[in-house]
Image (cartoon, rainbow, N blue to C red; front, side, top):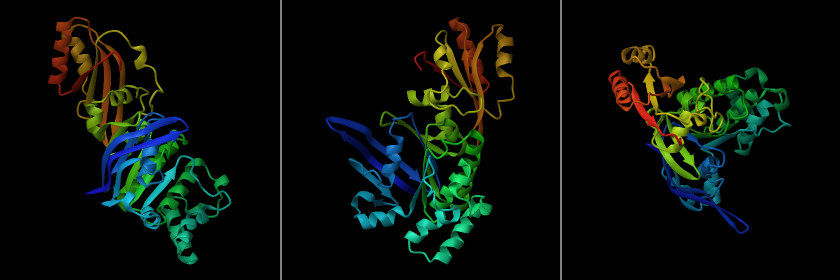
Length: 345
């Protein structure tokens, strides 16, 4: 069942005499219970897209349907009511600095008209949910970045939303804190059944908790689908670049962060994908022994992709075409998925 449907959505900004097409003909369907990732380089249009999902940005064309309701057909009062179902958290937390943690969470409940006592009880429950029961009276300036984001998550959950939008919610955090926030979001998704949409430029975030992903490039949707499927068989140039540039070993590289692949310009390159079942077999070593010819391992990485142990390796094969084909056949016989990598990717 689709909770969010995006149909032929476009967004154009007019800046004096300049027209900027931020999004062009985007079509997406997000199912109930998904943790759906939207990834792209800076300026790709992903943050504009997430703001269109709750009509903080009104699309220039197309539709956004939430539980079948076209947001464009609602008046302002109806739209405000619909937005109560769609919570949002941001990179910079957006907490009220003059209010302590519990009062930050109470604030949206007060706007909703909840009695103070009931709102305070709900806020304390949510602080416990996010692991900050002992920080109720702490002000944002007294909290770490990760703790502030946990308060922001608790505040977003205060009005019992069915959808949680996360716009670069972990970009300002260190890797260890990012891991803990992602684990919290996954727990919220599983226990509360909340559909989560994550906007990010970090592939590691997608791999860690998302089950489906859309890749945005220059305002266009270039690929979308199951995270594991796209990891195994990327079809778009943007998806292949994202995967190939993830060369740090921990899966935390984002677009453009690592130039290692760019420096590899010569020779036939082959990307192989292996699963937990094949990761422990010395396939490459055995291949070298069988054919009596070395190969270059340009990059190798193992990671968790959508809850599945996956790895990939970038090889430089011999120039001998017949020998190269024999090696490719050998790898296929061993159950590995392979694809050739062009020099311009």
